[in-house]
Image 1 (cartoon, rainbow, N blue to C red):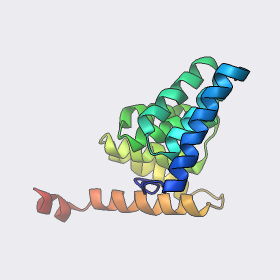
Image 2 (image 1 turned 30 degrees about the horizontal axis):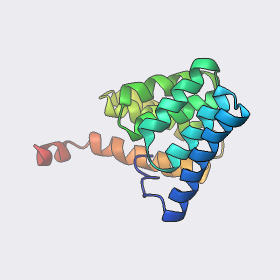
Image 3 (image 1 turned 180 degrees about the vertical axis):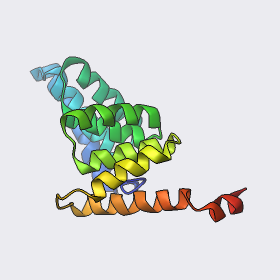
Image 4 (image 1 turned 45 degrees about the horizontal axis):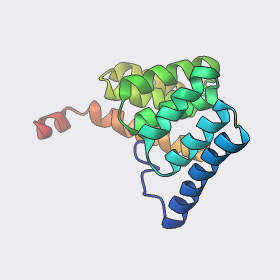
Length: 163
Protein backbone atom coordinates (compact mmCIF):
# COMPACT_ATOMS: atom_id res chain seq x y z
CA UNK A 1 0.00 0.00 0.00
CA UNK A 2 2.38 2.65 1.18
CA UNK A 3 4.92 3.04 -1.61
CA UNK A 4 4.31 -0.42 -3.10
CA UNK A 5 4.18 1.21 -6.53
CA UNK A 6 6.68 3.97 -5.74
CA UNK A 7 9.45 2.81 -8.08
CA UNK A 8 10.07 5.43 -10.74
CA UNK A 9 8.82 4.52 -14.21
CA UNK A 10 11.28 3.24 -16.77
CA UNK A 11 12.36 5.43 -19.66
CA UNK A 12 10.12 3.47 -22.05
CA UNK A 13 7.13 3.89 -19.72
CA UNK A 14 7.79 7.63 -19.40
CA UNK A 15 7.95 8.00 -23.18
CA UNK A 16 4.76 5.96 -23.65
CA UNK A 17 2.95 8.05 -21.01
CA UNK A 18 4.17 11.24 -22.70
CA UNK A 19 2.77 10.06 -26.02
CA UNK A 20 -0.53 9.17 -24.31
CA UNK A 21 -0.73 12.71 -22.91
CA UNK A 22 -0.15 14.23 -26.35
CA UNK A 23 -2.55 11.79 -28.01
CA UNK A 24 -5.32 12.55 -25.49
CA UNK A 25 -4.84 16.28 -26.02
CA UNK A 26 -5.00 15.90 -29.80
CA UNK A 27 -8.08 13.69 -29.57
CA UNK A 28 -9.81 16.21 -27.31
CA UNK A 29 -9.21 19.17 -29.61
CA UNK A 30 -9.36 17.51 -33.03
CA UNK A 31 -11.84 14.66 -32.65
CA UNK A 32 -13.84 15.72 -29.64
CA UNK A 33 -13.36 13.36 -26.70
CA UNK A 34 -15.92 13.58 -23.95
CA UNK A 35 -14.63 15.39 -20.87
CA UNK A 36 -14.73 12.08 -18.98
CA UNK A 37 -12.60 10.28 -21.59
CA UNK A 38 -10.17 13.18 -21.73
CA UNK A 39 -9.70 13.41 -17.97
CA UNK A 40 -9.50 9.63 -17.61
CA UNK A 41 -6.76 9.36 -20.26
CA UNK A 42 -4.79 12.26 -18.78
CA UNK A 43 -5.12 10.93 -15.23
CA UNK A 44 -3.93 7.48 -16.29
CA UNK A 45 -0.83 8.89 -17.99
CA UNK A 46 0.02 11.19 -15.07
CA UNK A 47 -0.46 8.35 -12.60
CA UNK A 48 1.89 6.16 -14.67
CA UNK A 49 4.46 8.97 -14.48
CA UNK A 50 4.08 9.12 -10.69
CA UNK A 51 2.62 12.65 -10.78
CA UNK A 52 -0.26 11.97 -8.43
CA UNK A 53 -1.14 15.64 -7.98
CA UNK A 54 -1.90 16.09 -11.69
CA UNK A 55 -3.63 12.72 -11.84
CA UNK A 56 -5.84 13.71 -8.90
CA UNK A 57 -6.71 17.00 -10.61
CA UNK A 58 -7.97 15.14 -13.69
CA UNK A 59 -9.78 12.49 -11.65
CA UNK A 60 -11.58 15.18 -9.65
CA UNK A 61 -12.52 16.92 -12.92
CA UNK A 62 -13.90 13.61 -14.23
CA UNK A 63 -16.05 13.24 -11.11
CA UNK A 64 -17.49 16.74 -11.58
CA UNK A 65 -19.32 15.54 -14.68
CA UNK A 66 -19.89 11.84 -14.00
CA UNK A 67 -19.82 9.49 -11.01
CA UNK A 68 -17.61 6.39 -11.21
CA UNK A 69 -16.56 4.29 -8.25
CA UNK A 70 -13.46 3.12 -10.15
CA UNK A 71 -12.36 6.72 -10.79
CA UNK A 72 -13.16 7.68 -7.19
CA UNK A 73 -11.05 4.74 -5.94
CA UNK A 74 -8.14 5.88 -8.10
CA UNK A 75 -8.57 9.42 -6.75
CA UNK A 76 -8.41 8.04 -3.20
CA UNK A 77 -5.24 6.14 -4.12
CA UNK A 78 -3.66 9.30 -5.56
CA UNK A 79 -4.50 11.24 -2.40
CA UNK A 80 -2.92 8.51 -0.29
CA UNK A 81 0.23 8.59 -2.44
CA UNK A 82 0.41 12.36 -1.80
CA UNK A 83 -0.24 11.71 1.92
CA UNK A 84 -3.44 13.79 1.84
CA UNK A 85 -4.96 11.41 4.35
CA UNK A 86 -8.24 13.23 5.09
CA UNK A 87 -9.00 13.50 1.35
CA UNK A 88 -8.08 9.84 0.86
CA UNK A 89 -10.32 8.80 3.76
CA UNK A 90 -13.24 10.80 2.36
CA UNK A 91 -12.90 9.25 -1.10
CA UNK A 92 -12.34 5.70 0.19
CA UNK A 93 -15.42 6.05 2.40
CA UNK A 94 -17.51 7.10 -0.63
CA UNK A 95 -16.17 4.19 -2.71
CA UNK A 96 -16.73 1.58 -0.01
CA UNK A 97 -20.38 2.61 0.27
CA UNK A 98 -20.81 1.47 -3.36
CA UNK A 99 -18.01 -1.06 -3.88
CA UNK A 100 -16.63 -2.54 -0.64
CA UNK A 101 -13.54 -4.18 -2.18
CA UNK A 102 -11.00 -5.29 0.46
CA UNK A 103 -8.25 -3.14 -1.10
CA UNK A 104 -10.39 -0.03 -0.63
CA UNK A 105 -11.20 -1.00 2.96
CA UNK A 106 -7.45 -1.36 3.60
CA UNK A 107 -6.84 1.98 1.89
CA UNK A 108 -9.32 3.56 4.29
CA UNK A 109 -7.64 1.74 7.19
CA UNK A 110 -4.28 3.22 6.17
CA UNK A 111 -5.77 6.71 5.89
CA UNK A 112 -7.43 6.40 9.32
CA UNK A 113 -4.16 5.11 10.77
CA UNK A 114 -2.26 8.16 9.49
CA UNK A 115 -5.01 10.44 10.78
CA UNK A 116 -4.44 8.99 14.26
CA UNK A 117 -7.59 6.84 14.42
CA UNK A 118 -5.76 3.60 15.17
CA UNK A 119 -8.86 1.93 16.61
CA UNK A 120 -10.82 2.48 13.39
CA UNK A 121 -7.83 1.32 11.33
CA UNK A 122 -7.60 -1.83 13.43
CA UNK A 123 -11.34 -2.49 13.04
CA UNK A 124 -11.21 -2.04 9.25
CA UNK A 125 -8.15 -4.28 8.95
CA UNK A 126 -9.81 -6.96 11.09
CA UNK A 127 -12.89 -6.85 8.87
CA UNK A 128 -10.75 -7.66 5.82
CA UNK A 129 -8.84 -10.36 7.69
CA UNK A 130 -12.01 -12.06 8.89
CA UNK A 131 -13.68 -11.92 5.48
CA UNK A 132 -14.58 -15.29 3.98
CA UNK A 133 -13.66 -14.03 0.51
CA UNK A 134 -10.37 -15.24 -0.95
CA UNK A 135 -7.95 -12.32 -1.10
CA UNK A 136 -5.93 -11.41 -4.17
CA UNK A 137 -2.12 -11.42 -3.67
CA UNK A 138 -1.83 -7.61 -3.68
CA UNK A 139 -4.60 -7.41 -1.06
CA UNK A 140 -2.77 -9.98 1.08
CA UNK A 141 0.38 -7.81 0.83
CA UNK A 142 -1.62 -4.73 1.84
CA UNK A 143 -3.16 -6.63 4.74
CA UNK A 144 0.27 -7.73 5.96
CA UNK A 145 1.53 -4.14 5.67
CA UNK A 146 -1.39 -2.77 7.73
CA UNK A 147 -1.04 -5.47 10.37
CA UNK A 148 2.64 -4.60 10.73
CA UNK A 149 1.82 -0.88 11.00
CA UNK A 150 -0.83 -1.56 13.63
CA UNK A 151 1.48 -3.88 15.59
CA UNK A 152 4.19 -1.22 15.60
CA UNK A 153 1.68 1.40 16.75
CA UNK A 154 0.62 -0.74 19.69
CA UNK A 155 4.18 -1.62 20.78
CA UNK A 156 5.05 0.72 23.67
CA UNK A 157 8.78 -0.08 23.46
CA UNK A 158 8.87 1.49 19.98
CA UNK A 159 7.34 4.69 21.34
CA UNK A 160 10.07 4.99 23.98
CA UNK A 161 12.82 4.39 21.43
CA UNK A 162 11.46 7.10 19.13
CA UNK A 163 11.16 9.72 21.86
